[in-house]
Length: 310
RNA sequence: GGCGGGAUAGCUCAGUUGGUAGAGCAGAGGCCUGAAAAGCCUUGUGUCCCCAGUUCAAGUCUGGGUCCUGCCA
Image (cartoon, rainbow, N blue to C red; front, side):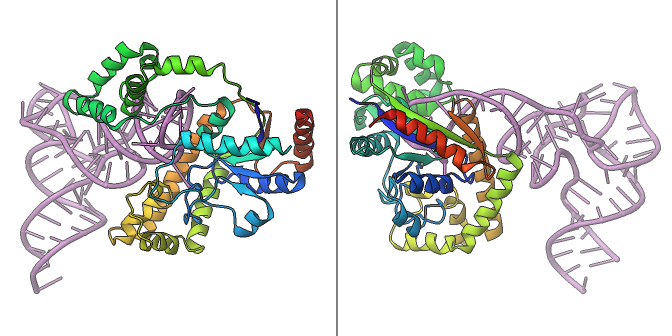
């Protein structure tokens, strides 16, 4: 398998990733691949800050609008879907730009994911029952026995990940740790990674104005429309920030202003987590939001592309 | 005006029979291999509204203020 070749633009929400990506993609005549766990969903346009139809017309975008709001999507599906697209673009001599704030999705492309089967329902219910009967400490002890290395890196309270490791062990007969070992032999990727940094205070104020803008653009109308299409507010898409906060308002249980405030707050929390994630990564180029030299970036990206020799 | 309820961390509030305070949220830092816009971890000294009194000891009891708030007028 050939190494995947791509450029990434990463950064917190509202840092200006999309506009830099557009500019680069147009200049280099390449495609954009979204790495955003919410732009995956159809009909959810305003709240997820999807590119406009004009932008999508000007540059070919991938991994946007690929499932309905009631579908479960995850990193595994993303990895499979996006990997195919990158491979075929690479085969045509195109090096795409991966843009998005879902760091985990980009990590999966850079480092791969081991081939995990669907977890059989009986395995899930088996451990769910144990969890209900004996509690999270008990299932953590089970993991300590089954996969001590995994237990060592997972906090006992992180029940979701404790369960996930147990599921893998039970359904494949191989521990998660061993899967990781095997995965190391897989080929990975060659990428040029750009990080857009932004001052915290500035980021927070941009988030607040962006949400106000979304409301002016008709966010509430969009949410109503999706609900009218028959999608329940319980479905996966509505777990998105900028959507879930407005459900109480639409049900008449909360004031609009309070919902707006919550949406801003959750977006700030999210941006903070993103910054923590990105902080530990190594980037080829770190630039400051709204304060960078496009041509300097372009030169470095071009130099990377030339070296790939495809 | 009458009768109540309240005033404790940036916000919402707990504080048992008096022993100088604690949760959630926010904020900050961190983790992260199929929920990742998710999930998880760490981090809380603040004139306990003010004044006086009782007491070895008062957020906690008593009296008096001040300011909110509910009902009745």
